[in-house]
Amino acid sequence: MMNTSLNRLAGYSIFAGLSLLLLSGCGGSSGGSAKTSTASFSVTDAPVDDVEAVKITFSRIDLKPTNGDIVSLTFDEPVVIDNLLSLTGNAASPIISDAVVPAGNYQWLRIFVTGGFPDSTVLPKLGNEADLFIPGQQNGNSSNNGTPRSLQLNTGFTVPAGGNADFTIDFVLHKGLTKPANDKGYYLLRPAMRLLNNVEVGTIAGSVDSTVIASNACSGITGRKVYLYEGDLNENAQLPDDFYDPGINAGSDVVDSDVSGQRPISSAEVSQNDTGAYTFEIGFVRATKAGYSIAFTCQASLDEPESDDDISFTEVIPVDVTAGQTTTVSFSEVPVAPEP
Image (cartoon, rainbow, N blue to C red):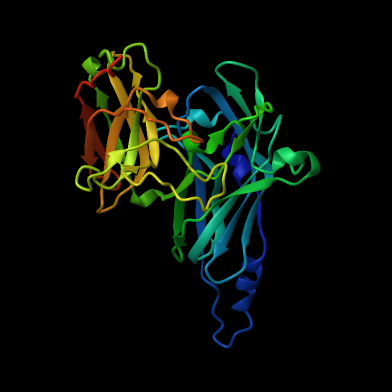
């Protein structure tokens, strides 16, 4: 389904501080060499409603060391993901493998996207294929004039000396993929992403009882999803909330006024498998002592990132995640149908 291939990933160029760093060990009195490592990056996705396919084309990745100049990893050929929506759960696709980079701590990364047809597009469930842009590209700074734009992920990470670091970039499309209110015929992809070190992640998987799906509160409703939250919501006396991002249309410094609810960090679609069971899987969950909570809703299709939507959830279940392992959870509490 995807035309991304590993032989494409072999070609990249490293600019800026790396060349100077490699040379710095040659003239010193110690005769030592700079410490380097290799780093690999893949992409995955949390699902989004009302869309059949999201095609996206990447041209390079920039890494910013805590001490040093930006390191640019540029591909000889663009890396094309034919449908990002196919990369859910534990599925991921590599965009660059074993790139030689300076070892040490990094402040952020930028992933560059070539916007617009035919490079990056969205196919909605109803309607025609539309352009996909990074904010700003739709105003003329698109691939048509040779200026791809980037999404910046402000998450610090470490590349250990002499080893191989393996990271996954999780695109939370339910939050990041938006369509302008004036409906100009294109979609925007905003920087709603998570960066995961693959040696630190586990999986949450499970099922939703058929009585929950068949209940009056869920029957005939689309948008069955499990939302993932940081921490134990029950212990912290917090409620699960929707994917609303108050900074989307008003600037990233806008404060979320809803202090009673917790915003999700990811989600997974609940689908019926070959045996008739309703199952879900959330991959690439970082193991942490604080733990997580998950909550099921039948109303995910009503959850728009541009607005604070009042959607209902069933039971909230606390979950602990262990790196390299799968935690299994089951939802069985039948939701109460809203009053007419």
